[in-house]
Image (cartoon, rainbow over all chains, first blue to last red; front, top):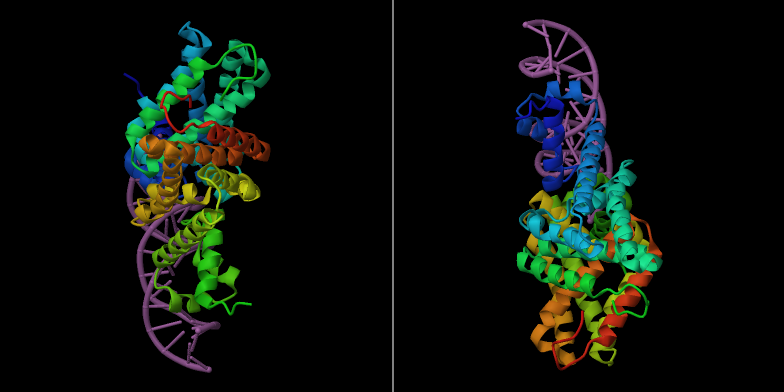
Length: 195
Length: 195
DNA sequence: GTCTATACGAGGATAGAC
DNA sequence: GTCTATCCTCGTATAGAC
């Protein structure tokens, strides 16, 4: 269907490997093997490993934007859209149980490596944060929309980490249920609500 | 005060470095420099890097047990003890904002490295899990004590990850407040409570 | 117990042929 | 655009002197 360029295949393979093995622990040989090209050819497309990382982050940014836009287009209310966000934990549960959250994992690793691309990776989180914030604002919670967005982001992140640590998919399902209930129970006007 | 053995100093330095730089990214040279010994001497105390990792995990297990036991001895109720757990996010906030959660970080990294010590690292989480479970049970929530323990563990984990990603200490404080409120509001008998 | 010196392999990166 | 061959650095690990 798609005559995918070698460059695209490299980025895709790197994305896959960075998620499963981590950035630092993935070697050029690993990527080259996955793509099916030689290590030398590699450098025709990317001069350095950091350049590949930048391309991977770019790809994830684009994919994230597409996904958020798709949820927008579903024409439902903000609560339904936020529920779409929560549900990705279910859709991706098999991989999450094995490798955790791709974004959280990358951000954490780059922080420890003190890598210059740290902020770019965090920008993917920011994409979700701002999108969630907009949804909460549409629910009439403009006052604490950002707080709610961060809260939900953190909960999702924690669920992914613990599910991975304990290899527990059922935990994801239970927590997703609680988060969905929490969104449904959120009320527009007053701020004396429980959370 | 303490005539600390070289071995102990190595383990302590490794613990420190594994937290800040990650296990894989920490080299023998890094540890040797931190301790102030030569790389050669090193191998007199530990044959392999994995042996150091095992010692570090052991140290963390011991330290965790001591901490949990200390909270037990405070002679207060289970709610206060759980609050002690939540409050470590505040006590360690400076380091958490920089490097995230030491346990979650290690477990995630070892999972990606497919390291044999994965389960040992997860055992530290299990220590907290069982301890929290016991506290919730003492509150009369024996029926869903483990669910509550996992829930709180996940929330703490998520807070650490997000606080680190966004370099945001205030977020920790806000979320700690919510978690403390949540514990206080938990009721013993019925199970139709909000969460 | 601690040191220096060194073997060995892996990984990032380059040169140049095809 | 893709390949092979090669360089260089870094990191783990060992040998052996002090």
